[in-house]
Image (cartoon, rainbow, N blue to C red; front, side, top):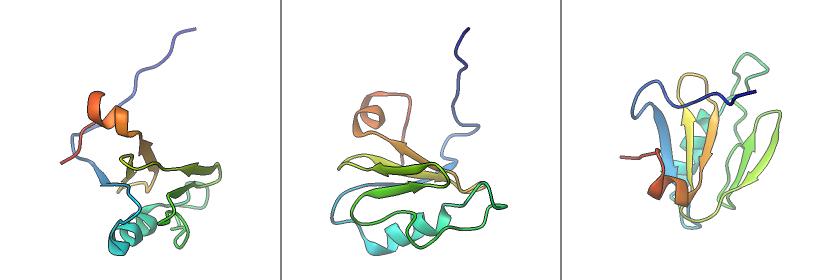
Length: 97
């Protein structure tokens, strides 16, 4: 069995912010409002989808702990959250602008 490849359909198609403990509350709110529940017709799951503590709620799957320098992203069409580590954003195929 072989693995599949993945990626984004277009550059800069995701909304993103770098996580740190002093993030602007407005940016936290924008990310939290953008994350949607994929099992309930995309209804938003705000509040609580993302918090200043670095907890990122993945709808119907669990919670991830963000570390400083990690990037929290979401697809603005589907509302699906994506967590990219600081190392991956610095040296991998991911980018931000």
